[in-house]
Amino acid sequence: MTPLRRAAWLLSVVVFASLARAQDKPHAFLNAKLIPIAGDEIEKGTLIMQGGKITAVGPVGVEIPQGAEVHDLSGKVVMPGLVDTHSHVGGGWGADNSAPIQPDVRVLDSVNARDSGFRRARAGGITTVNVMSGSGHLLSGQTLYLKLRSARTIDDLLIRDAAGAIAGGMKMANGTNSQREPPFPGTRGKSAALVREQFVKALAYRDKVQRAGGDPEKLPERDLNMEALVEVLDGKRVVHHHTHRHDDILTVLRLRDEFKFKVVLHHVSEGWKVADEIAKAGAPCSVIIVDSPGGKLEARDISYGTGAALEKAGALVAFHTDDWVTDSRVFLRSAALAVRGGMTRKGALEAMTLAGAKMLELDKRIGSLEVGKDADFVVLSGDPLSVYTEVRETWVEGNKVFDRSRPDDRLYAEGGYGAGSPSAFTGCCIGEGEADR
Image (cartoon, rainbow, N blue to C red; front, side, top):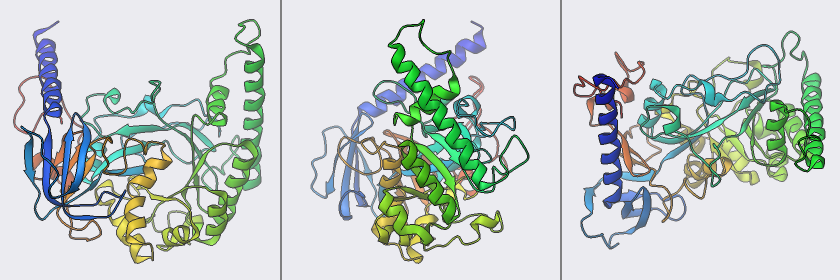
């Protein structure tokens, strides 16, 4: 090992050891207004964490552990870390122009963990993201659920399930984006037909595997496309489906009913037109509040009232950035605009947190301030629905990953020279503010 590599290795050991020690020590956050999401707001509350988990939450009077590091948050607001159910931070991309259906592609293999987008997202109070490839394909590959921890590589961001598998869903799309020259479909009808064809093949592939009973002589030739779709059919992967127009939304619901997969409807620009049908189908909706004006004709009827219409109908609603479409730094404005459009305050704040966690099937870990959940939370300067409110701090699993009082973090919150540069980690000669958090 060269001296430079040895210095970098030793520094990384020291950094991660210090993080572990910081997590072992209890922290008590006092006197803030708490918005737990699961329960009523607490005007003057206490939040205690240790070992990366929330150990207590409640009004003034909660017992503070001996030796705890105390943080006085008088005048501040604390709420769960924001969950972005649809993002493109990290510069990742999936399927290419060779075919409209490529479920074997993993966005895991193309995300840059040092991309500046992750630091912008932390500056916006986002602690969990669903990173996907684009919507120019009917099936563009496997998405990735990430925690916005301090990271050197993509492995530092991964969320794993109880069995150790990397958590993620499957990206699908319909509408105009995938209607292109062959081999892509030219019409909505052909788009749906191609998807049906692939799921029928996946059903047959699954049957062959099951009939083989583990006998290698009887197993079909391995097919990565089919393996991925079987995970969808078996409910191991949630389909995250880009769809705008009301008729496209209903097409997705027909396909879901036909092949019995779990689905989250994304964007739903015209969801307000079929809110009752969506609610009756029990389909969750990940809504984009601010879409690119004139971005596509099928989104022309987008409405601030979509969240309200879906909430009133009884559908589960979350919000997303589609970053860069909505900048991660101003994600909280989605809740404010939804309330302006008629959504309840409670519903809008849940749509930023717990509802998204449910859509990613991570609600046992994140999305609310509850004992036993991950210590993912954001410290705000004021009410989350105020345009004047700033994100002051962002914490992930008990570690502070953004602090607006630090000049280098403030740069990513406000923009300016260097804010678009990827994170660096040299291992030597590190000046103030240069080491990656």
